[in-house]
Image (cartoon, rainbow, N blue to C red; front, side):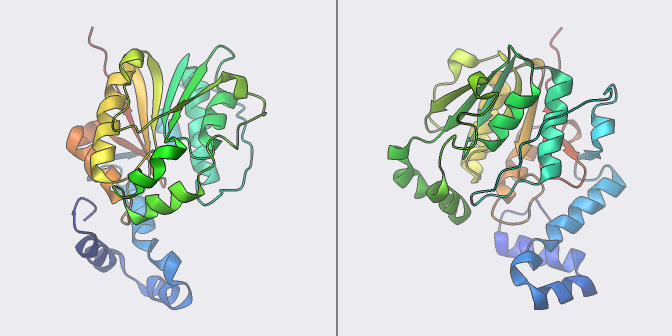
Length: 264
């Protein structure tokens, strides 16, 4: 159901696929939360079945050689966007284990994930993060979906990392990711995080660029994967561009991971 393009049909079929008495009770009590219920049930299903539309793994299965780790998370208010603490913890754990020298993030917003990468990476790591410049936001809002339009209006680029420990690692870049010249960074990144615009064309463009940015055996991570709502295009774009057996969803989360194979 998640791969159906039409939102109304997708949501209707998703509702029919996952409806139960608790869903009905939630709809009566809080319709806004009820709209996300189907996605949560589906992500629970994927974590239990392990492989259906794609693979689902726990963080321990994803990082089988992971040793005991201490991660750093700074709790910050969302500022209009929600990233769960467990998803931030997963990003921190992956960063600790990869020990990347170069990270590229597409979509800064307030800079919370950029700060998470900086706090959990080696001292020599550089975190590049790209965001829309203020002067291009009005035009870009005409091309994206309503959910992204609302986020763009609330964006305060980098405010969450400015002046914080770890911020010296962060290099703030500005540009429209669909037209930005990434060529100077090709093949240099150990980790690429895709969390920019969520309409289909933007996610396809960002994903193609991410695959060029990441080095062999490096990782690409997408946020807002396995989402029934306005951000469903993330799922469709990733599955269209990559073999589904190479895509791993971290269980019960909206994070998807791809590890670029070595060409040797």
